[in-house]
Length: 73
View: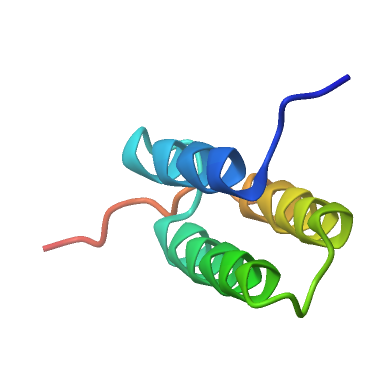
């Protein structure tokens, strides 16, 4: 049984962004989406299972694209 939860997923997305494992643009948007999922679950608008599923889906998307190379100066 997994101990995953949306907050843990959010931490992993932020870690992927901070370690340049994921595109920063996409990781920021993914983090905002997971924050919204957490808020909806806290308000009773999403079940815990749906919140976790949606969080894991957006994490998968965030990890699909690597960071863009630095822009030339």
